[in-house]
Image (cartoon, rainbow, N blue to C red):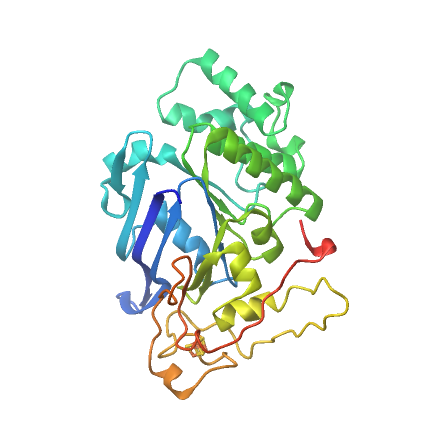
Amino acid sequence: MSEPIIEVQNLKKHFPIDKGFFRRTVGHVRAVDDVSFSIRKGEVFGLVGESGSGKSTTALTILRAWLPTAGRVTFHDYRSGRTHELSSLRTRKLVPLRKELQVVFQDPYSSLNSRMTVREVISEPMVIHGEHNSKKIDEKVVHLLESVGLRAQHINRYPHAFSGGQRQRIAIARALSVDPQFLVCDESVSALDVSVQAQILNLLTDLQTQFDLTYLFIAHDLSVIKHICDRVGVMYAGKLVEVADTDDLFRAPRHPYTESLLSAVPEADPDVKATRIVLEGEIPNPANPPSGCYFHPRCPYAREICSTEEPQLGQPDGDTNRYDACLFSDELELTGVNEIPEEHSI
Ligand code: SF4
């Protein structure tokens, strides 16, 4: 098992709610609420959950796009052999590290500047990080274009001349232009057609080997997660409720919320009758979450104690690869999925 490249400990990101003429803070939105996990070097770690569960906020707080409210994010830089405490670094020391931690966003139509040529888009991070030699920049841009499946003659075109899938390839090339070690893919295939999704996922897999990358992959589509991720973390209302190897999580979930997500995946075997678990109610208001287990108002297995005692993310006996945050995970027999049917797989 490889060493961690990113370690997240008790990370919190709360946004103040200001009201009134004097903009008094009357509460906080707990977008990320005490989340801990680590991402091993060379792996694809997935984050999955409903919209508003805190996946993107977690990723952006790791990248220090936002300052954490509390907690630590540690980056182990394998090139320099140094360890950096990202959550508390001053901006001056953070800027050179930004090239090691890059991101590809969801919408390639808004993430690329339509007034810049492909060359300018891809080379911009290189210039920001000190590369001003035009010949070297052109050589690298052409190499990156070819690596992501585009051609050298595309270099002087503008983003509007490309399809959604091609634009996402340009966005990936831009992220790779500064040779990062860690790449966040924030719903990077969600806006694409299914056939194009498959091409981009396969491209990301190839690039991982070629560029020695580690991914944090955010998605709400379980077939995408199953296709690309080595391990998965499941988020609910700003908290991590389960972490496991992808196959283990799909086959035998330990948290009722994971089971309900998996129940939405169609059964591959036509002889097996699938039972969809339809959760009552809505994801809780992050400004006013429920007491005890945040999932208890919707959990089909909730008991009285669940409304008062908050479960902590912990490991089951004898299994060092899994974590869950359910008071009764050892007793519950939850249903997973064995395989995703052909038409729903990537
Ligand atoms: Fe459900 Fe209780 Fe487990 Fe929460 S702790 S997931 S409410 S059984």
